[in-house]
Image 1 (tube, rainbow, N blue to C red):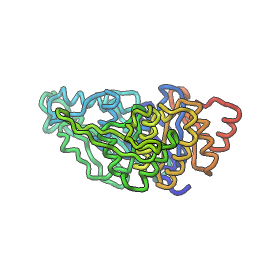
Image 2 (image 1 turned 90 degrees about the vertical axis):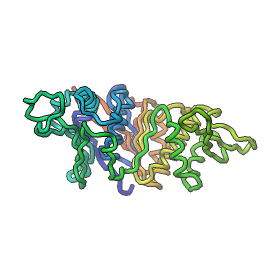
Image 3 (image 1 turned 135 degrees about the horizontal axis):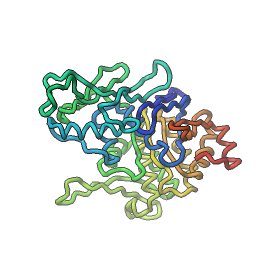
Image 4 (image 1 turned 135 degrees about the vertical axis):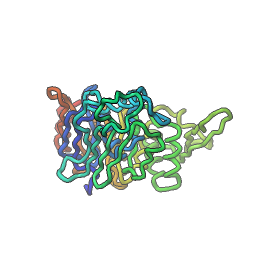
Length: 361
């Protein structure tokens, strides 16, 4: 199977996870479980880990769930600092008052000595104090302190501007295909990275799973007056026609497949995260989709984490995983008391589950 970026995973004090430990991960990992058990939170933890706890990655997670808005200027008033503290608290287990957090959140390898990211609350003695705070405070909360294995600690200070959080440490390559698709800017950027390369051929192969007569793909930029952002349109050339056809006119499944394939080939050497991977796809396309993911992930050294609610998706995953030794794993998240725990299913167990229609979702 080759070296994996994460052969195991431990997540502590993050979102729904007081302490989640997954002893074994594979090249391609399918995460299943009931609603509100933390499937999307697990993808968010991996996103934060890959971006090494950068200021922008924290706020990407906060804003996507509408839990706050990143400050765009220097913040010195207590109300602004309080708003940041409240937003950051949403990332910690139980959403506590940030001032009461005694243990930081941790994400990384479950193995001793493995790479880990930890984020804790930072404090300093109250001199000089921030205007508006009572002068008798012996210490004050200054923000979040991020520790990354082998790197210097950084502090996300409440009182600094966004310019102060430009992190020069490059992230681990990581792409996130959200359930509602890719934004215009992301789509254009990802396409520019792979156009006229062999990876473009993998994207075309993905589209041919649904529409076998797709011949070429391109992303066209439409400049329209009065718009701050240029609109990008995905167009395809079909063998059966000389006309250029908008991808959106071919249905939601084609757009979803395009987004999954585009993020997959751009995650070379890193992680691909896909939320609700079956969205918009007919069950008949799922086995070939998984075969392509297994193939490209192995070739480009990508570790894949995807969530699903669909039994058809699990069955299709088992079909693809059966052809690749030790490359696939189903991870079921479930509640045990007040904690989320993981149950693992390898290829042999998946075959029995599929044969006997055992419920694992």
